[in-house]
Image (cartoon, rainbow, N blue to C red; front, side, top):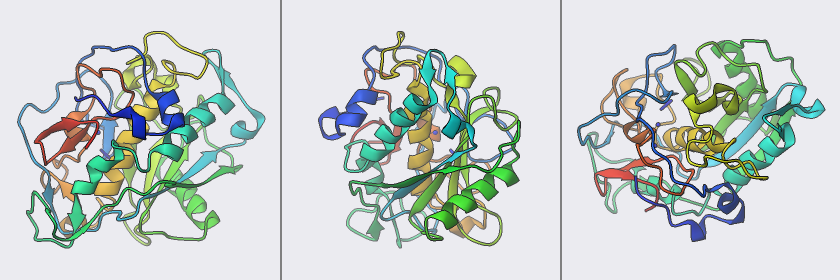
Length: 311
């Protein structure tokens, strides 16, 4: 899984994303991917960001040409409801689905469309060659409450199983889909909030399912983006839920451009280099020192050789 410097053009993002967008600028230390049990996680805030201008290179694998998103609310807690920080779990779900439901067609998601598949390994700019990632509207295809019991500290294997249940619930493997697993308040994999905020991956055998794990991000406090942009909270959840859109968008954009990071080097999509040291489009831009007015992951653009929130 992997991580997010220019202000987004928010007029095309949709009303729900406009509700998610921040209203206050903020400053904080930048953070790259930090050491953790996974090779594709978004690190917590606080470390130094990569200093060099490092373009992404095509590694020969597939990308998600027509991105789709499926969400699993894993655990009965999402049905019974819970509250944290003065907000309900239902408000968290509204914030999350508002973001993912309107990301398609936005100028932010358009950043990924400069990347493609089917070109020579080592390509930096696709131009008109290859098959490009597209940016359709309506990318959120379904949400589902998985009432299977959630362990206090689920393992990666258990999270992968939850993603598989989600995939099967919605008709089986879709090569263009990312399957997101959200766990409720107080139930997260060890390392959350201290080593990483979220991650994306694929199984090392069987299906090539691209999946992402999102713990209950506000549980990590400022380490994973709470009040990162909005210093005060509003009724919609701006401020308290800032991390959901920053971290969730980070993992989404990375899975679209590099959905298969575990098999072989030729399965990788767009990374700076193959192997555990390779950075994805979010990694190069995670936790910038200034977020301006948007609660959006900052993503690397080969076109401008810089981090961006629109294209």
